[in-house]
Amino acid sequence: MRLIKSPSLINKELKKRRIKGQGIGFVPTMGALHEGHLSLIRQARRDNDIVVVSIFVNPKQFGPKEDLKKYPRPLSKDLKLCRKEGVDFVFFPKNEDIYPGGFSTYVNVEGLDKFLCAKSRPGHFRGVTTIVAKLLNIIAPDVLYLGQKDIQQAVILQRMVKDLNIPVKVKVMPIVRSKDGLALSSRNAYLNHKERRDALVLSQALKLAVFFINNGASDAKRIILRMRQLIEKRQSVRIDYVEIVDPVTLKPLKKVAGSFLIVLAVWVGKTRLIDNFLRK
Ligand code: AMP
Image (cartoon, rainbow, N blue to C red; front, side, top):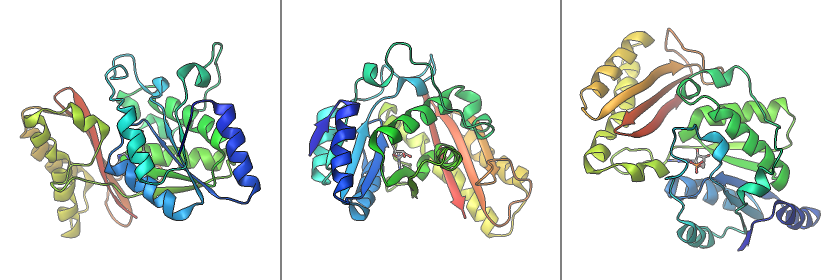
C-alpha cells in the first residue's frame, strides 16, 4: 500500500495503471474509518484491480460553527485498516494542495441542495460537490463508492456526475449499523453513554415508520407525527427534520406509495446525527 500526499503524483501513478488496463475503484472518506467505510472499501476491492481511498477532512463542507477542529483524525489506525483491507493507494492530501491561494471555483448542484440537511448546513453540499469533483479529476476512477448513510450527498453526487458527464460509475452501498441499530458514523465518537443510548431513537423511529407503512399507512404527515412523538420522548434529543421524500427529487411526499425515502436529522446533545430508510 502506498501513501501519497501529492495530487499530481497520485494522478501520474494511476495513469500508469490505467494504461496497463487496470480498473480503479475509489472510496472518498474523511478518515476515522469504521465498518461503514470498510464495507465500501471491501466492495471496491471485490470489483476492481486497484483500490484508492482518500482521507481528507474537507474544511469547505464544515460550517463556521461546526466540528472541523475536533473531527477525529486517527491517521495511523486508518492506515492500518486500509492495509488490512488490501487498499493499494491512500491519498492523504494537504489542505494547501487542494485549496491553494486564490482558489475560487466551486461546483453547485442546484435545487437538490436546498432540501433536508442543506437547510441547517448552508454551504455544506457545495463543499462536498467541489471536493468530490476535484478528487474525481485527480483519481479518475472507474467506480466511485458512496454510502447510503449520507443519502442526500449520494443523490447530489449522482446528479453532479450525470450533469457534468464525469465518466465514472457510482455505487451506493447499504447503511452499516451496530447490532442495536445505530448507523455507524465517525461522529458517534462524540456521544457519551446516555447520548449513545438516546441515539437509538433515530433507527427506532425509522423502524416504526416502516412498520406503519407495511401495515397500510400512507399519509406522510401522520407517519412523521408518530416518528416525532417517539423521538421527542428522549430528553437529550432535538429534531432538526423528519421527512418522507421522493428518493430522486428529494421533494416531500404527501402519500407514501411505491418508492420513498424516510430521512431524519436529530441533535443528540451537541452531536447532529442522520439516518434514513430507502424503499426503491
Ligand atoms: P465520511 O468519512 O463520513 O465522509 O464518509 C465516507 C463515505 O462512507 C461516505 O460515502 C459515507 O456515506 C460512507 N459511510 C459513512 N458511514 C457509513 C455507514 N454507516 N454505512 C455505509 N456507508 C457509510
